[in-house]
Length: 320
Ligand SMILES: C[S@@+](CC[C@H](N)C(=O)[O-])C[C@H]1O[C@@H](n2cnc3c(N)ncnc32)[C@H](O)[C@@H]1O
Image 1: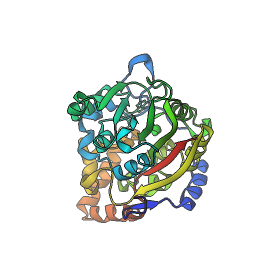
Image 2 (image 1 turned 90 degrees about the vertical axis):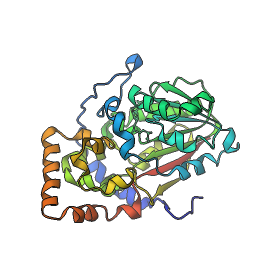
Image 3 (image 1 turned 120 degrees about the horizontal axis):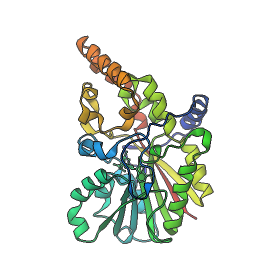
Image 4 (image 1 turned 60 degrees about the vertical axis):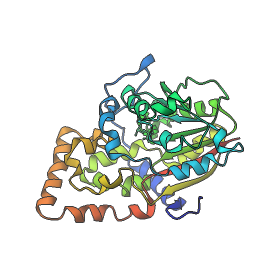
């Protein structure tokens, strides 16, 4: 499965170089707390208001790489259909939905009531049949017993924890330690994240606002740091895989006028990093390019590398 067309093994030279650039450009991340709250007072995403954006999230988000996720889970010693899987930060349940017919049972957890509401609606029949259970809570303090699941998947979540390169990613370390606690020996971790290269070159609209682009890139822990954190927690790194045949926003991604539409923007928390003035400037740029007949060329120019590198990377690790 891992050698299939549409999936590349990550070129480690890319992220090695990127990491240096990342550290060179690492001023303090501005923290602009999101306003929604969760039981127990644990912190939500530090910048996105998911209870609000959850209404539109699925309009421009697709769970890409589901076949890679299943490929990682299938490496467990147990048959796939017997696995119990934690979907940590499940959001609207898109990745749970992608695997639910194939695995034994899913524990789906998210901090945002709004995101969970969407997930519950989407997977109501499966919940009724006992194939999935939902939890509102924090990935840093999982409401699950030790040694209780066979696999953990986490998809595009840890950039929301609020760690900085300077502080050594303590929240991320806590989360990975929680995964090691709840996994049974031999457990699988499938961790979907963006490399620094992908954050730089795989989302054309990030080029509309250099300030927002720099800020969001710093929220993404470089993959080599992530791998080291896994090892510190007792995981063995087994590989990394990037789907290159699909984009996270589906066909909507290619719509140059998308940034003018709030529902379109709600599919990527990048936009939450922009001040009102920065958003206005980015939208003016779109309108100007459109008026000049140059919008499609702008999209194509800043999307040129994406088909080779993909937008996301799955890191695959096992416990012990
Ligand atoms: C970009 S969305 C990804 C959702 C889903 N995994 C997907 O790929 O479609 C990030 C999700 O992480 C959740 N989240 C952020 N911080 C969290 C935390 N500390 N504990 C639990 N969930 C968290 C948010 O509420 C949001 O649903």
